[in-house]
Image (tube, rainbow, N blue to C red; front, side, top):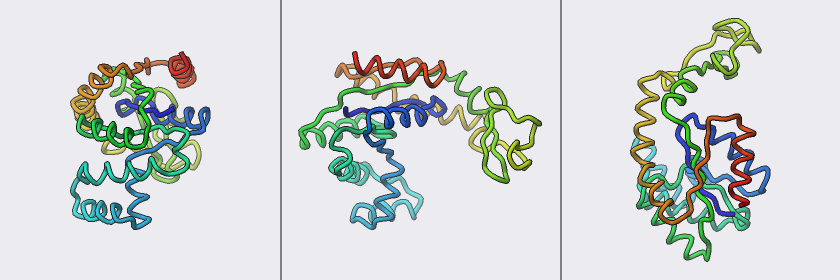
Length: 214
């Protein structure tokens, strides 16, 4: 299956992607990972992307799309793939359709994990990281035994700058502004599969499996 995975920060996309990779034995293709891979491997598009990244600029669509096209031609993606973080805009979605047409392929499902903003803020502002070992905790879902102290190494716990409420609400606004048109685009193509992301990870995955198998 050729799948696109959509979901706001904190929706649990990473967990679901891992479940999907394990079940269907197809690769998760993350835009960030393949950009870094292309830079590391020194491909022509990777070197071009590195120039933009070194200047602190966004890598333009033309380069990102070219790198995605190269990745989809690799052997491990021939049985299917899970695209994570791409497309983000309508022009990228249209470019992806052109790439897949050239490859004789087609997106089968666009899985959108839906969680309302207030629940996402609650999830993300509760996260705490250990300064010592990097262990992650959550003040609601996975609290440390002693407040402010890591269970593993007794290091100090802290809240990352990007986990404060103001930053999170801005990240969610950007996601919603970018993704709303995409959701309408894929709904219009009859490919959108909306999944309730407020349940436990196994319940969400069970819903994904039954929806994609139906």
